[in-house]
Image (cartoon, rainbow over all chains, first blue to last red; front, top):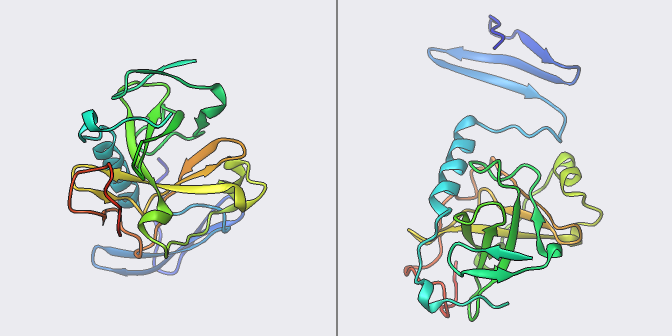
Length: 72
Length: 146
């Protein structure tokens, strides 16, 4: 992993069209401003983790199989 | 072809029924092929993995649980799905049968023309990961309400 040190208001570029700016630092909270093309998906890591967990929790569905029939 | 299912024994399916998820689903990246099987007297469907017998989901067309459900998909997502017309797209929500909630935050989007699918993540507060749909763990007969 590449680690860069930046101060408030400083920026980094990823490729030519993704720009990340440190807009505010207060205590342990850092605010990032992100400029990226519309088609680049951006999500907080926790959101992906939540989706993974929820998919896992839903992946072995429990219901009354005896009363259910496929309609095929 | 024959397909072993988690809960319904071995069934016969056509290859054309198989939906390809090029990225798999979050948490299940390796499993990329599913079939969607309707249930009798139910608004729910079973999404069964073709690659792994023990992997299956209960899903429901998103429109049934909420009429006010709109989101944008990005150009790169459209490319992955091979979208020519948005009319070809249908959306499902995965059900967690333990607490009977629907995942509106990460809908399944399927291009029915090419049988491609993606689970897309909506990083917006307004849609819930655990949208309560009904008080009972009963997926047959009962009308689903949001």
